[in-house]
Image (cartoon, rainbow, N blue to C red; front, side, top):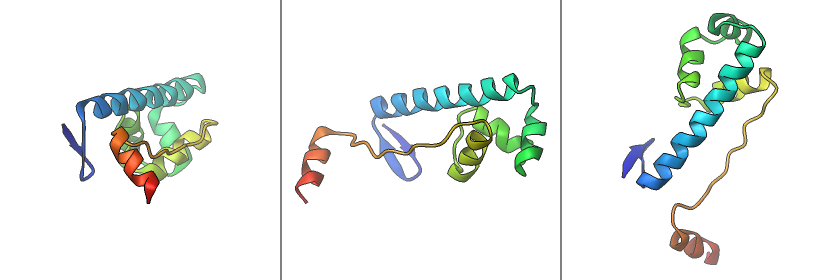
Length: 96
């Protein structure tokens, strides 16, 4: 189990989460390079710091607004989903 943002994630969920973050980080890096932008140039274009771009490229998505801003300028959008960690949790919540 791993703690993230006040929630405890199972190892399996944490691994999937890390894999998804890695995929998004690769998109950001690839699109930035394809557009021949440095981290600093992209940051200036968006009004954020180079450090924020670096954090996103390392899979640190602590600020959804910044992530959305960066992906938008690179031609992508953010889609957020709530996915139950356990089947039982999903079954229980659908009865309410």
